[in-house]
Image (cartoon, rainbow, N blue to C red; front, top):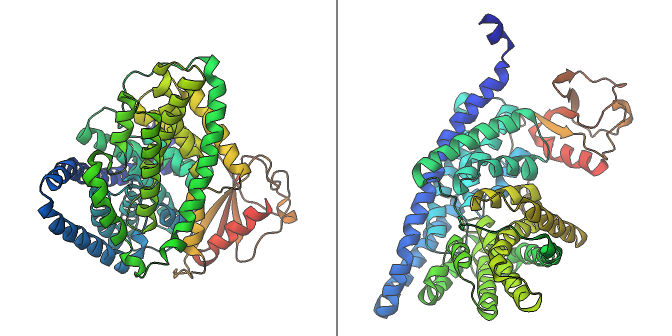
Length: 508
């Protein structure tokens, strides 16, 4: 027994334990957040149907929505970091570009998100869930008084746990952190994040059951003879994805023309949602009910085009106002509508069998998200877990790859990185100047690969402290050759960390 315990990697066991703790807390908080939104969402069609029958109550309902907008606006004014999805803020924390008070963000994002998403605005619960999970993790790190490096690992695990609980998608939660946030496979990060995501998902499944969030029933395998349509679909999704990015990033400028303070811009979507609710009560919210409905029956091309226009325009109005809410689910909904529209078009003009319409709904969700977020692996696994079907990995991968390449050709950046750049642009961070470490992976094709340490032009205010090569830790010196697969551990302070990462990435 002694030999067995001696062989255990106690560091990894410790981080797995902390990941389980973070996952448990994040799972409880996010599941409660999700439950409140779903329960309110079930009441909305009933409320709007009654309002249509008794219009006299429209005035008090409008006043109630104004009160909600004002209250959420006050929360935003007191804590600006709860604006939007929260994912850029989490990425900024991990890059030492944003400083956040975890308790303030936790409870204000929780309440603001319920009021914004729950009242039917075209916003998703997943972005706030990721930020809520990260806030839980930051709280754990603060209470345990861990170092800056360990705090970042726990923050990553909290973000993964938040996404896992929001969509019952633990592997997608892990991949999101690795692919979208860190862009590398740090052993402690993925191990802790996976433990947290699994635990958080366990809590979520206990509350909501085992059925996948977007269970569409049996989905047939798409024959190889139709794969050429996937390439065409990927091109369409890439073009539309780039258009989505351009419009989303222009919203801040457009909203600035309104004679309203930034924290009260939510008045616009809160009031505009009322006529939409009166005439389309089942189209409210993030859109998961629309995806499920499209899987059951297929509307006409005109109806689908009108639905796409409505969802796109009001999703932009909702998110651009800065209200606490995400874009994951609205993007997936738009992708599903585009997929249904494309498939119905293909039935008429390309002899596609109607039985495969459902396939294109699923495939387009992943392709559209891959185009906008530029995180194809996360998109593929997220949709796979949400739908609960493994038969579409090949068509999902092909479409996501084509859409990704098209957006890249058109000059699109990952949407959350672009939002983060806008968030921190011209803004000085008020950080403590604590010592921290950042990790830089040596990737295939990198200028670091095969280069001596002394031959690289390192930025100021940093020290290359350690080089990880597999399970080995190497103390680097001038003659050390960096190789593909290495992870460089750089010591600096929080004030310079973001700048150092940018300068190194510009060179490699």
